[in-house]
Image (cartoon, rainbow, N blue to C red; front, side, top):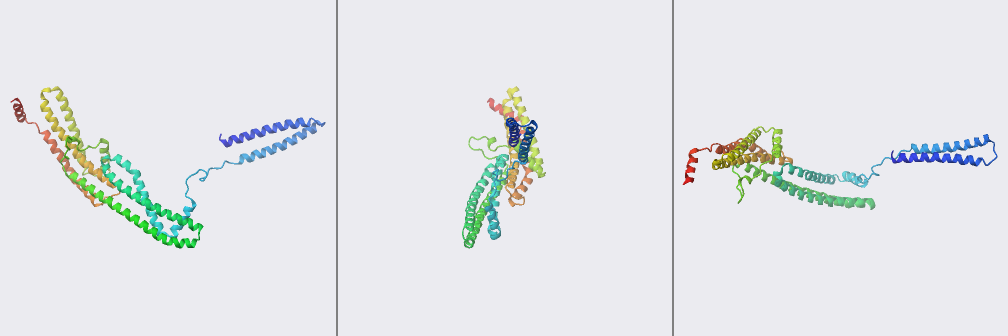
Length: 379
């Protein structure tokens, strides 16, 4: 039972109790007079009936009332003030060029806010691209700040005009605002022009980045380690999850000139890991072959590093293309199209380079060389 039903129930109960007490009081009151019983009973019934009808009528009216449904105003839901709606309408009909330019500013600001809402998810999905994404964030953040500052100043001027238009001499205010509207249009055009400069800066950053990715894709050599840095730490192989994400991207786009090479590299990586695991077990049992096993492990470990780096180059280029696509770069963009073309053409040769490094380990067995090395160690 809700609060309204509870109140109605209490009202009915109070009415019934009051009617009962009234009948008792009236009966005692009439007994003081020397009236025949039938007359006294008729009076009692008459007054009781009137009171009963009055009570039922009152309660019926109360029950027929429905609790009011909360409206938008009563619930406090945000609603654009009517004055602002009137200003929008007035501006769109009287100053359509100003209105159109201002809407373009709002559209750009909305797009920037949407970007900032999505960028964290992109960075989590593609952590290798975070440094590049940070560059884009910095550019768009500055763009957003300048656009917002310009829009706030323009919007303040509009609202000030609307205040004077409704409280002052409207013809004078309109005449004065005509010049102000021209200035506001110029301010918006300047702000949009500055925004265009930011867009050009972003395009240049993307161009430079895709060129670096292309250079990485073409270079089979491992990055030079810094002093004290191990060769297997000069790059970070993709995790299974991130690698699978990019494989899904390539599968969706039906990149059949890239996918088979990646799959073959993955299979070869698994075989190399199995060989390394076998050698470690073999070394524990055959302790007299520690030297030979150690050299062989080093050779196969190098093969593993080059295999992972080959995968890294292909996956990194794929990820860079996907990142720029999320940023709005079209497939027919010159830099995008060039990198995709290079990736398709170079994927088989990247696989071949990894296989060459694998062959160094696979064909490393040389008894004559091993015997000569042992003799040298004895002397």
